[in-house]
Image 1 (cartoon, helix red, strand yellow):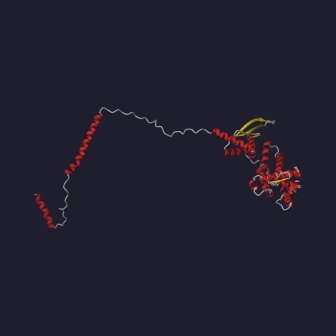
Image 2 (cartoon, rainbow, N blue to C red; image 1 turned 60 degrees about the horizontal axis):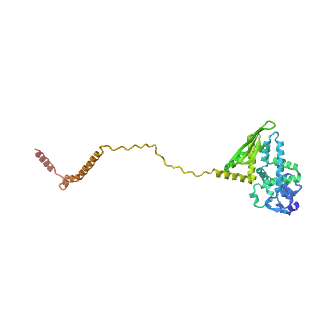
Image 3 (cartoon, helix red, strand yellow; image 1 turned 180 degrees about the vertical axis):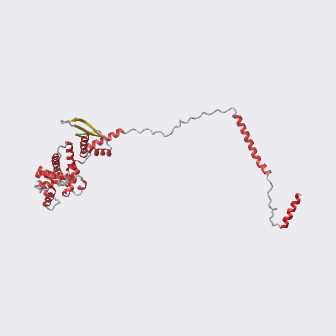
Length: 350
């Protein structure tokens, strides 16, 4: 029945031969049962349903492929890094199967070009390629088994696209990412140590749990405080991304906290400056001679007033006659006239 449904759907290939060749280039072998791979490349935006009304898309294969991918990558990491602790192995596997890595792989391998979806879905679904990659792993498992999935990851992925050693030692600071998210959203994040004890080998182990606005979040264990906090931070970030109820509880708790922290408006302080540092002197009482001084002052003022009134009249009386210029002449004198005038002046003095 599944084959009939898939065959009735219009595919972006003129013949199945083109799909066979494209898949051979991606997974490294020819599929036995093509219907699994057609389904793995069918995004839910197509909205097809079978006779029973159930949706026909790659979501179920994505679920299966996610579990198989974890097992295969865990197997590879375990054998590749001998003697490494559980925390290191877990972090390395997480980096290899995280959504961002799978999205890049789907783009590089050409899987995105084979996905059947509605025209607008590819630009709005950031994880469509990574989801299809997981569904493809699920199809390989159903078609040829676990060993084929292992070969696909070792030869096609790690052999061509990913350097496992570089990925393993690349620092991914989940705690830093969580704290940065908390600062942007102004939420309180607290790391609480649950316990510190020794394992059977005498190695110290730590456990931490994160609380966001008092809401219990991820819990992590490790052989150091840093390792346990990193594990707890990763689980918390996963919960924030995948559990809407959790993030709703966080922001509800934040709203309650900020409401309780609101304080009534206080009276605005006065800005007037007090001048109580200035010492004012008491008024001195008037002396006994003050009335006498006042009388003398008044008599002086009267006298000056009379003098001022008399000055214009005196000035008028002492004013000389107007200066007359009519008797002044200007004429050149002869030599005889000058000598006669000088002789007259000399005799007059005698």
